Structure formats: structure tokens, C-alpha cells
Length: 280
Image 1 (cartoon, rainbow, N blue to C red):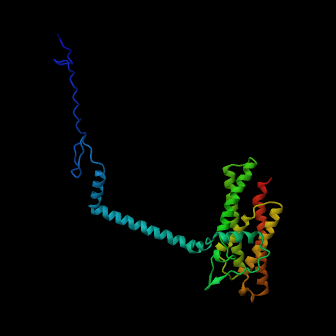
Image 2: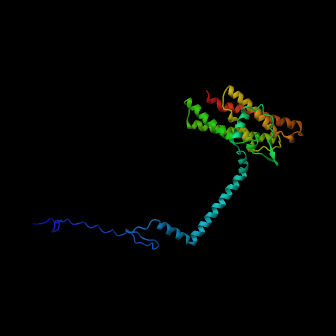
Image 3: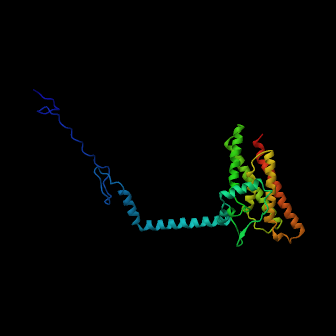
């Protein structure tokens, strides 16, 4: 009987031999790491080889040291230039608040008429931080109020089906520009009035930013505007027209008083300008 070519004499089927491994495409020239079966390097071996090669290369070491030196020098330059325009330590002072201070300050902004002592407290000629002195200005409440104003503006525009990202960005940028212009005008007024005080740009920015706490309209707008005017007059009068101004000439005292009243009267006008288009 003839047998099929795939079977032997006992009718058993031949087992197919595995094909030999293909030759590697490139010769192994590493010499520094082990080879797994199949011609592939062990995991992590190439990384270790490259690191050891770089660490053993003097030129690479010098380049790495030089790059680190440049990065450190650039960091120092950035910090130096930042401190020239913005004092980080002074900025931290205006954000040194706690929950109790925020609650009391919001109450003072809405009901300032019963507050008696408006003097900023000092300790060894250093003003106390806001969390220890209710009269100290802060930037936390103005920042949160500004963000709340932008969000409420977006919600109001959305209810009126007039919302768009461009309009919301325009509201935020317009409000920010008005704050900057107001601070610049106050700085110019303080300079022209030759007021000697401890008021800095951060102080004026804080007092200008409190206007965003009084989001409301008609009756609420009238109340918050009058309360804000009273708060600004008492705060700026105490800060700007301090004991040093008592011996100043009468025209200068009147100019300082007009500056304070003008800054206060300007607040409700800005509030109305920034909110009237949201309720029509």
C-alpha cells in the first residue's frame, strides 16, 4: 500500500520544524549591554548605556553644568526684575486674610455707618495684616468680587440670550481697564496734591476694587453706592489726610479733601457704567 507523502510508515504525521530566526538587520556593536534571545537588548540596557556614556563624557558634563548655571542665572534675573515692579512680600500682605476677616469686611462694606475707628493699626511701625486689622485694605475681596462680577455678567447676558465669549471677554477687559484708569488718576491726584501718606498702588487698587462687592441695581445700587462712598471717604481721609496734613496750608487741605470726595463720587458712576447694559 502506498502512503501519503505526509505520513510515515506507521501512518504518523511529520511535525513541522520551526523556521530558523532571521538574521539581524544590523551587527551588534553595543558591547556594553546584554542581548536577549532574538537579538533584542535587555529592557533598560540602552538607557543605562546612554546615561553612563554621558556621565563619562567630560564635554557632556561641562555642557550640563553650563546649562544649569544659565538656568539659575536666568531665574535670578526674572526674580530681580519682578521685584523691581511688584514686591511679592507686599503683595502677600494684601492677601493675608481669613474667613472671619472676610465676613466682617463684607459687613463693613455694606453697613459702614456704625463703624467708629477707621485708623489702621500698627505694630512697631509695621501695619498689621488684614486678618488682624479690619481697617487694613486687602486684595482678596476685590479679586473675588471682580471674578463674581464677570460671572454674573455672563449669567445676565445668557438669560437675555445675548451671551457670547467675545462679549464676556469685553466685559472683563472693560472693567479691568476702568480699574487701571482709576488707580492712575488717583496716583496723579495724590502726586499733584503732594499728599504724604503710606498709600501705595496696592492700597489704591484695593479701594478701587471694593466697588465690585455691590452688585445690584436700582434700590440695591443706591444703597451699595452710598455705603461705598461713605466707606471710601472715611478710609481715604484717614489714610491720606493723616496727622501730617494738619499743619498743611489751607489750599492744600482743600485739594486733598476734594481728591477724597472725587474718588468717592466716582465709584457709583463706574458701577452704573459697568452694569446698566446687563439689565436692559
